[in-house]
Image (cartoon, rainbow, N blue to C red; front, side, top):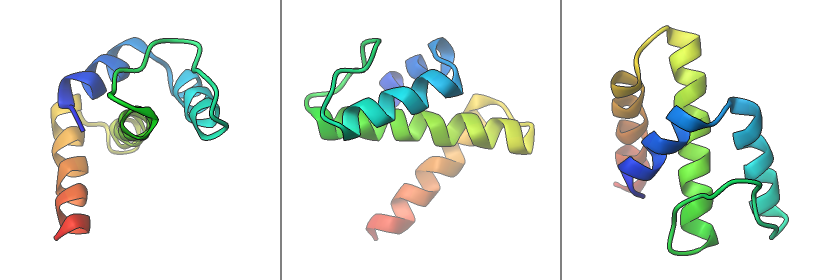
Length: 80
């Protein structure tokens, strides 16, 4: 997971285009835009994180940094 790649997706894509990219990656197709990542798994992680962060920003009326902090907390909890 690379935070700069996630940030670029949040800043450059809409929620709809990210959902479409997620579906494409799950169907082993190329998304309609470039998603950084060393493989499809990392690309999917970046897209999923961007979707989660955009939803969190909207639902809680917070900026990117706060939403990213909440996402990384969830990731840390899930792997510990």
